[in-house]
Image (cartoon, rainbow, N blue to C red):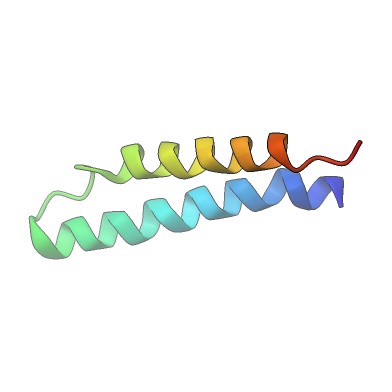
Length: 56
């Protein structure tokens, strides 16, 4: 279970980065407008979720 809590945020960040990259390419032509921003937001949200819901 500990490995899942480590790997899941990384997978979510990568998926978010890919989705936002392709959305930006299709809309504006440059892919990196919000890709890094949204990947970081998802990463921080996952870290906060894990810290709030950890087993004691």
